[in-house]
Length: 253
Ligand code: ADP
Ligand code: MG
Image (tube, rainbow, N blue to C red):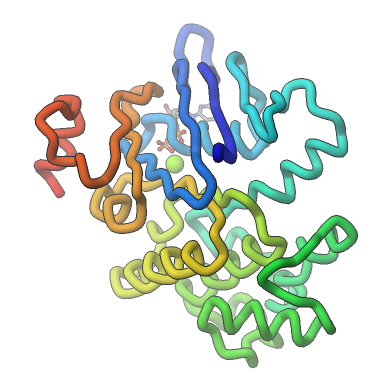
């Protein structure tokens, strides 16, 4: 089953130059699709188009068999709930004035009435927050702290907990480990893999780090200058049929 389909997507910031150039991709239920490519190739632009924060200049995004372009308000809200995100910088993603528990509860309170929780259960705010913290392997006392009292890795766990709290179908992860030290990077990748196994959502995992993508993702798309050059199953990465640019990326990883 396909969770999301992108067809011939185009996005331009400057006339005559496409940051995203005719990109088509689809992501299956429970799948982790890696998107790899050098800095500036258009990965974040593609992510922002998917998240609806950037207006597209062509092509379509299909969710639930319908194009977002002519979706109803209700369908867009449903999309907004089901497509969550985790960005590179967890400090910027958390309101410094809110206790961790209040940041964690924010999406749940927004979508409470539309949720049919399968994996989490809500009996009280306190219990819900504790369950989320436990799921991302953080001590439950952290709920009463402020973001500045947490390490980068802990803050990223909080933003992951917040993204999964409303049981989305897809999480767009844009360089989620890039701001972390190497040890935390590995731990976050392991956490993401184990959450996917237990919760079953799909990932679009964006990184310039082919090794990280190879570790987490079953399928890998290679982007360059706004275009997708190559898409392949992880196990076929060393195939001779890979695009020359992919071979170049492999040679440095
Ligand atoms: P990546 O995430 O792969 O590093 P980006 O999507 O951030 O790439 O950038 C793709 C291209 O679009 C780059 O040339 C970048 O300079 C340009 N770009 C990104 N965001 C903007 C913006 N808000 N305004 C103008 N140009 C942008
Ligand atoms: Mg980027």
